[in-house]
Length: 605
Image 1 (tube, rainbow, N blue to C red):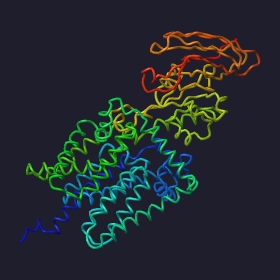
Image 2: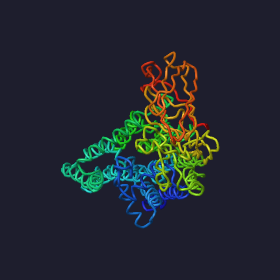
Image 3: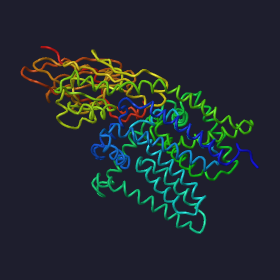
Image 4: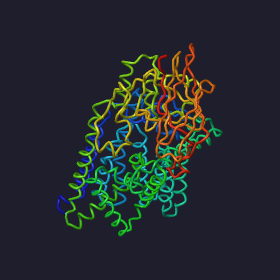
């Protein structure tokens, strides 16, 4: 007869204790790291989507996230604040997701230690500590992925169709919250449904697919209506594909090449090398153990994580890698827990799984503390800047806003007139006549008199974020130095906050305020230009004024008189010689370039 301590009731009670301790730790982590204010631009777009679901106008951005917005709207009926509604949804998703993940890992591995340790490693990973409590799509999507993974093993354990229904519904809900996941969820669903054994196999497969379809219709129909019906849906998808091509696939694949991309997706989500290397080593050991034991129950998880990670490595922007990699962390955390238990059993100290998991979790918390501490107690720099503008800048002022801050400005500074800093986005004719009073910049500014708002620099911020929005600067624009592009003028380089030059094409023009004074224009051609010199014909309001030759490595200044009574002038630049840097072996730049505009300003008569 077994001892009392080994009885099923006693064993069940002690087996549940680690689960409860893990739940309490995850809950404490989320509640103690609630953000003080919004931070990421995507949060703003989701908040605007709750106020009015309009994905055609980036409320939120494509592909629309319809189920996330629907859940957020439901919570907002009670909370009456889009930001806190989404934060609440994320926190609840983390807590329920933890329980679902424990259940999934327990059924896949057959081990309570693996289940709890794996779920704790995932939910306390540096990536989840940073993004788990934010107003984003990731936590709800990960909740439904966890529910799907918990339902998949039940197909082997039960002859009922209910696990198949739960699997299909949860898989669809994950896609509804974050449609990009469809590429990984669909093969996971196929792999999970196909082994449904017994005489009822086809019924269970059919039930799973019907549940997936039914839930998909619940979130797809509102999206279809919002984008203008079937006629507007294909252009909407085309727009999304264009955004992926422009901002993800076409983005620099990190300064470190392929190794840099792999590091961003695989190592950085786990923090510094002192935390990421042990986790990845344990995951490698766990993968070997799973393969040796032929744990086929882990196949849906492996397919989900493998496809999602492969797509991210090949296509997605490495600067957003930590968020994009979140689904793959489910598999890494599970494999690490399996590896930890395998090593502990080999050492004949199976209890060592718990201190190992606790030590790693403590390392994650210590690593992310510099970022989380300031985020929980201080408004984000973007919010600080917006509050300063509201207090100090009249509503009649015009703001020029860098792209990273455009969502924040549109939501927090909607009473101000705003124009984009990127000249390629200034498509409205009236923008050509607007002169901004302040530059709202993402980073340090060299404009005189600038004010900055910042969070302290940390390794966690560099590894776990996109590297933007840590410093926000507000710079007054000197009245005599601002001009607006009319045609053929590219963005400031290296940035609008450090405006050293702007490349111009062979036919370019700018407009300046020049009431009865003179205009001074400085032109240059860098040493690396593939042409010896460029001749530039400078005109004023359509009339030829001067011709100047700019040698390679040289600089020329042109002073242009302006007739009295003229409020503004259009200065044009035409050049018979231009070049394409990519064709001259100077990188991937395929713009047609003629000369650099180093400066332009109005001067007194």
